[in-house]
Length: 350
Image (cartoon, rainbow, N blue to C red):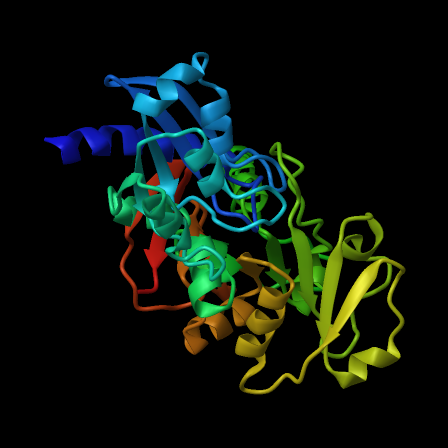
């Protein structure tokens, strides 16, 4: 029965934690509630990177602090035990004399990883772990991937026609086929607001001159990463001139082409290890969630290499009959949703 009650309050922690999506990276999303006599007396979540953690906000929301010594704190992720941008939450819990803490999942970050729970138990606090553990880990799958695999979590995204093409064959300067509608375009921008960086290839930038920002959704725009092996992207491209941060990845031959001020260059060999090496470089830059938007060859290269975690495929109603074929993979949809006139299939690479 206690486990069932714990699950109810942990589910509220997850609801709160998700409110930080798109604002807390490279930190994880965390929610916390303080419960006394079966009632929530304080709740909070990590709102923004560098600001107070969920436990701090939940405890601060309690009007009567005399209730804390007989309360239980629920938190979706193990309280931190180290000094970072904020003081350790484990010390705050000890100082407030909260007698019991229920934790959703442990933190894989080496500076925490079990140490927060140990600090609480050493202080005589009863600690329960593993409540809705799978759900808590899934909420922060990008953070978990970065900590355990030392690379970004990779999401592939493309839009395709009903007959399986992502674009018509077109001449330079001819506009791309419009598969997304007004509603699904907003969905794409919301997705961008949730990631740290968005990656496209040379041909996509030259053909479409995209901005890759979140113009249609509230939130920060992701860092743009563009591949330009031979330095073919013109200096007038939007990804170079609109003031948003861009990282251009090229080979040695691309170094002969000067870049606009404010654009960072990364030189990598375009060999068989290019994608793993690129992901390693992005991890070193604290990019935890990478969105790969195209084109078709770039998306297919991630699939062929097995370097992807999920794919979100938008299928519109139009028929193209011929053109650029959509990427191919062997996964079945994990779930499906409908946005405007489009179907969005979610695939997982497990």
